Amino acid sequence: MTRVSPTPALARLRGDFPPVGRARVLVHRGTCGNAVGAEAVAAALRASMPGAAIAEGACDGACWAAPSATVQREAHSHRFARLDRGIPDELAACLAGQCDDEYAGRGEYGLLERVGRNDGSFGDVIGRGAYGAAAMAATLRPEQVIEAVAASGLTGRGGAHFATAQKWRLAAQHTGQKYLVVNAEEGEPGVFKDRHLIEGDPHRLIDGILVACRAAGVDTVFVYVNGQARNARAAFERALEDARAQGILDGAAFGGDPVTVEVRSGAGGYVCGDESVILNSIEGQRPVPRYKPPFATDEGLWGRPTVVNNVETLCAVSTVFDSPPPPTKLIPLSGAVSRPGLYEVPIDGNTTWTGVLATAGSAPGLVPGILLGGPSGRFVTPEEYEVPLTMRGLGAGGAVVLPRDADIAEVTRSLAAYNMRESCGECTPCREGTQRLVQLLEDVPANRERIAALIETLTEASLCQLGGMAGRPVASALESFPEAFEE
Ligand SMILES: Cc1cc2nc3c(=O)[nH]c(=O)nc-3n(C[C@H](O)[C@H](O)[C@H](O)COP(=O)(O)O)c2cc1C
Ligand code: SF4
Image 1 (tube, rainbow, N blue to C red):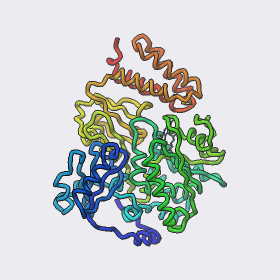
Image 2 (cartoon, rainbow, N blue to C red; image 1 turned 90 degrees about the vertical axis):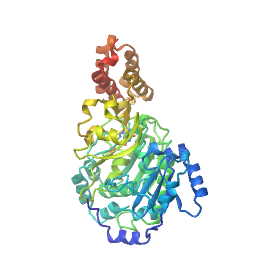
Image 3 (cartoon, rainbow, N blue to C red; image 1 turned 45 degrees about the vertical axis):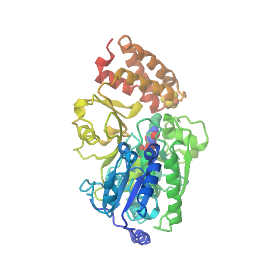
Image 4 (cartoon, protein in one colour; image 1 turned 90 degrees about the horizontal axis):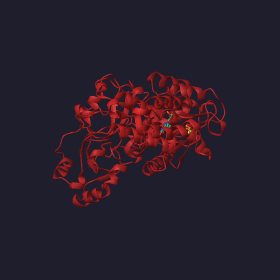
């Protein structure tokens, strides 16, 4: 892999922030770390190692290790897990140079490369490859940017995997006021990739935003952050301030057109992740889906052409000028594994669930299934564990590993009940159908045919994909685990 060379403008900017080069301990103070005592760990480290450089940054994706800290020496990194149990002597020894590089040879390049490796300051990320894509895009014509994204094969990581270049092309055809909306809602249980990316590397998102704006001819951006993702919002707003101060948004740093970026938050709920609900919410309308067509790229915010992109999609945009761009996908993995967390896997024909489960500390032979895609998802069964993962097959990527003794019927009922509760009530098939589905699941043997017919109605007649996909986990469970629903 060769990274895109910095443009002269970016090289000048990077020159203003030479690397500090001093060994330090970076305490992971993201949402997961803070929830389990990372603040106290930072205080304990400062008390026990006076004079040592103790920095704070976001979590590095290893939720299982929290509260944790990473010793960073030049290019070396070594993570120390579960520091609530005490600070081991090895940590100070590591800072002094007596430990290996835990990540040597693991091919760390990807979207998580800087996540949990920086202290949130602009100086700490600019030298680690940030803004390579935005600076390059500013030197290209919009069509050239779209061509590069098309050549990279990037598809939407919000779950539907629509071709990103195609979406931008549709918006680029229009003239006049256009918008970009960044979908950072992520209200669905079991998915925590986008807020992790924003907390850990908000400048990567801004990099992708600027490329999208250049390509689609957009000058106004709304970043719609889940109302509960307070750390993510704060990290993004800090990064935005820094980017503004460095002339990155107004075109002064790299050239290109000025871009205005505003942050918005909604009240939350699964349906709030649907792009048309976000548009209504930003406009101050009732947060319910819109009828399509018209599609947002033709008539979005205030009737103007609008590109809606997921956070991970835009973060992946930051790598499209590298050769080759890394074909990776983030998988937020939780449930019955020893090491739950956020994993970045290459989608190169070699990655399988067996490998992912092993990395997360699970013996695939003991896992009866994986719920992939949350409440709209399906069950992956052991027969598929050796099948290479595909980008489209992963959807948004959220994966919950079932325990050995999982009560599949109960899991299925709770997913159906979740969809019923989250239904916004705007259309009849979903409002009535999700309730009826929950009732029918009380006695599957007696209701098999009615369940199948109802799922068909939900799929065909619902206004949005909350209702449209509500029957999917039920159908998948009935097909993959028929014995779980016997009388
Ligand atoms: C009920 C529902 C929830 C959704 N939640 C999200 C979400 O949390 N984040 C997201 O990016 N897309 C979500 N989507 C998909 C968005 O509508 C949209 O397709 C996506 O943001 C487009 O970005 P992409 O092309 O970059 O994937 C959801 C869709 C539905 C129907
Ligand atoms: S499908 Fe469900 S969530 Fe979507 S508009 Fe209809 S009632 Fe609302």
